[in-house]
Amino acid sequence: MERFPQPEITKAGIADFEELKLLMQTANDYSLEISGIPQWTRWDIAFDRLAVQLKRDDMFIMRSKDESITAAICIDDYDERWGEKANDGQAVYLHQLMKDPAKAAPGVGSIFLYFAASEAQRQNKPLLRCDTTTELPRLIKYYEGFGFSKKGEVVYESSNRPGVLLEAEVTD
Image 1 (spheres, rainbow, N blue to C red):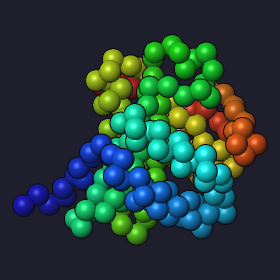
Image 2 (image 1 turned 45 degrees about the vertical axis):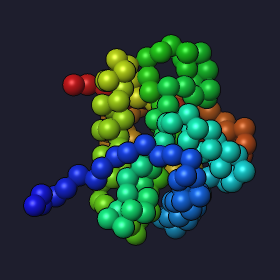
Image 3 (image 1 turned 90 degrees about the horizontal axis):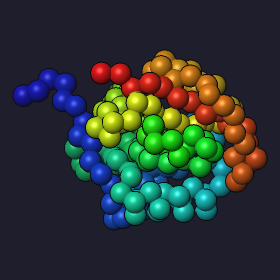
């Protein structure tokens, strides 16, 4: 028996949409609880984007032993927030890193970040890029702990909230 089994990462499908919506709301409640700031404020836009990501086959999930989804991330090859850089073909983009804190195994965020780095390497892309609201400095520090650095600013059109663009080099 493996003492510390790694959670299996699989692609999500359209059938997972409703469960992923609940996970997103749970993750949002967790963000609100620990920081006083929600991660998402416009559910209509967030859920529409989630549906598109599922249709594009860009969502990855981890499940618990009871098969419920405990964590998820979108790994994409484009993000309009990066402007001209989005078309440079040098990066994979991370979106919607989320977990259920009551069900997810410890360290799922780092497992997903390493998984995303391996996806970037598989695609011969030297960079990981993501963004988050500047209202979540704890999350920014989390990403910086994995080698991400600030590369720009953005204002989210849907909420008019300020954001930061983060980038990390993928190394072997």
